[in-house]
Image 1 (cartoon, rainbow, N blue to C red):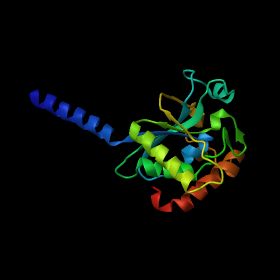
Image 2 (image 1 turned 90 degrees about the vertical axis):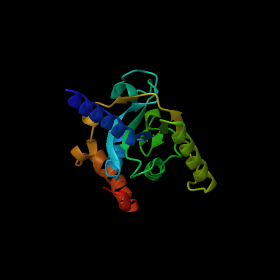
Image 3 (image 1 turned 135 degrees about the vertical axis):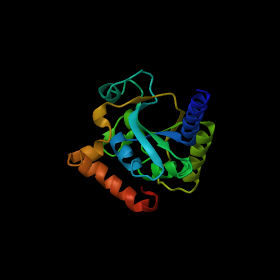
Image 4 (image 1 turned 180 degrees about the horizontal axis):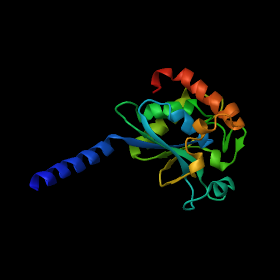
Amino acid sequence: MKKNIFVLVLFMFSIETMGKEFEKATLGGGCFWCTEAVYLELNGVTDVKPGYSGGHVKNPSYNEVCSETTGHAEAVQITFDPAIISFTEILEVFFATHDPTTLNRQGNDIGTQYRSAIFYHSDQQKQTAQKIIQSLGKEKVYKNPVVTEVTAFSALYPAEDYHVNYFARNKNQPYCQFVVAPKVEKFKKVFKEKLK
């Protein structure tokens, strides 16, 4: 009996330790179909969940978020292994795969739900995000200033099931063909050494 309890304690400790090996990043980079499709291809990423973050209403629906009355951004929460990929690299992909200089807009997707946002999970993530944004400004990487919001993470309300893995399940849908697919292909060319 004691041996079984000891094994159970070790098992519980190993699960707890395993969970601590991974980190989370929550990012809003326009339509979450695009952002999810990109991060699902990235080596070191173990999970990507689309949802709504940064607002003031609990459990909002997609329609409520699109009404711009809840304050939420379409976001993805990325679980990643920092032994394989760093938060800095996660943000490198983030800034390369959307336009962080357009306020409340990504291409033809217009509204506060499409804003560029980093919802940081720790002071270290906050500092990293701020340093990268400062560096992008100093180096004049973009013609216009970066307007990415850097805000403390409070909650991610999961998107409806039909949004999950949307691109993989709807590749023939026009938005996927003309918006998501080109973004994913560009990402794969630029970050080919970081793909799964």
